[in-house]
Image (cartoon, rainbow, N blue to C red; front, side, top):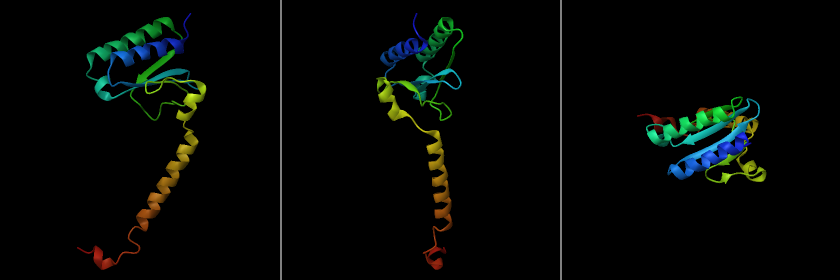
Length: 138
């Protein structure tokens, strides 16, 4: 019997052959037990009847084959945990060592965001510190 991940990777490889310009990433989020497939660009996801039919067929076939599993197909979103990336159409199927370069530590990213926010706030308050006031008058 085919595993869920193999099923999805096979289907996504077919999508890559079928839809020129498509970018697909697939990850399994162990915390939520969801299989997550991100698809872009939006011009393929919406308004392309052939893609919409293929997406519905994939979802239906997956749910019939794996009724206890959960599948999310969406546009790329930062709320999706893609740290366990199993497939990226840029690189096809990723092995353990290969997908590690795609792993983003969300705690580190949050700290970077905090530091950038502080830096921006600091630079905005001091932006005109060394500028002559009369040069700013219009």
